[in-house]
Length: 163
Image (tube, rainbow, N blue to C red; front, side):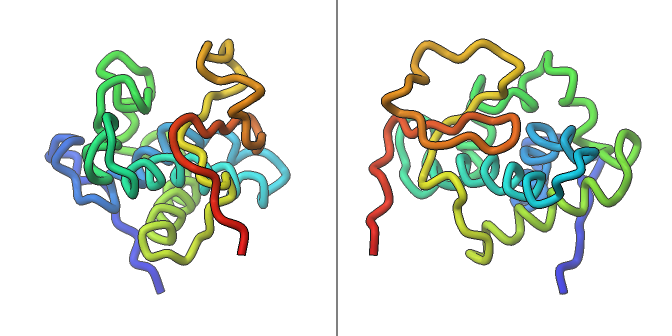
């Protein structure tokens, strides 16, 4: 059984335990769809958002050499940006959402780290939310798939090998 951990409000975001920091990224980037009726799609979105960071961490490059560096790389995951409206919510998620929302984010983060949750994005290394204009580097050529409100793209990583 997974023991759900919460962020420590007196500890800076950058110093949170890695599994909690990872759950914070998933919470900050993908939690709003928890009110949708398609719960599988909610789970798959969370797994996709988490796997983009995890895929990057397994392929060190300009975005960082490990998961912590990848998550905290400036301007990569908007919820960690100092001016992002979701940043304040990261240290006290239960003040903004029901416990079930944080729990789902933490379980996905722990499952990805433990290798239990497969990558639904086929090694995507970037995504964007449909509510914003597509970044110029996200093209039809590097598009992988859409999950819920997210478009996933593979800009740098090779496609997974088919077994």
